[in-house]
Length: 110
Length: 112
Image (cartoon, rainbow over all chains, first blue to last red; front, side):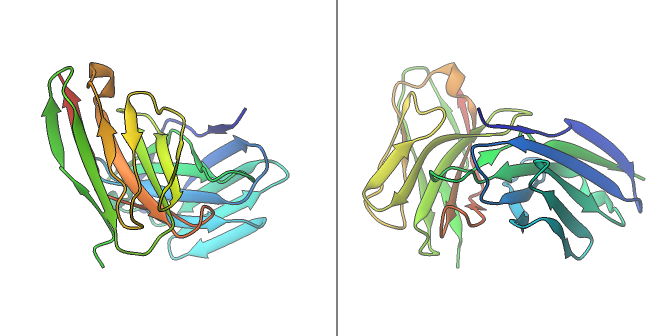
């Protein structure tokens, strides 16, 4: 089967660093996405990894290890506006569907 | 560009009623998707389309129908609404299946 696991909730302090983990088992691999979703809003694209390693984009970085079926999203210098759900999604090989995890709700406290 | 637009934003239906959720994109994307998201849950794929005239079932297609007569439009039809269809519905599009998806603002549907 196809499965994506993420922690349900995390809490972190403003100004700190937080790492949100994602593990996946899918039929092949064609890329991993991270999306941010604020409460009551639509998901928006954050990052895409297809090769092993770290991709950095401002305060956000995403890491991928294909051999371990593992990714993480790293958020630095946390701000209150980073309180949101973070969805990990994988595009398996073959077919046209992307598989979404249930998301990790991040609470940033002052 | 407006991106992906959805109407209506909110709707309350009675059990057994029918309705169409509208979705349009102006980015000339080939792929379009309909998802539902229940509270605290992830996105479940209802139907998707790889181009005009071509649609296929996703994970949870029962009770829904779609059509894709143009590249821009991808309406979702609910026949005989049931309380289990109370959810937030998101339409999304992408240029290719391995590209990032762009989501519409969502339709919040309640069936009573």
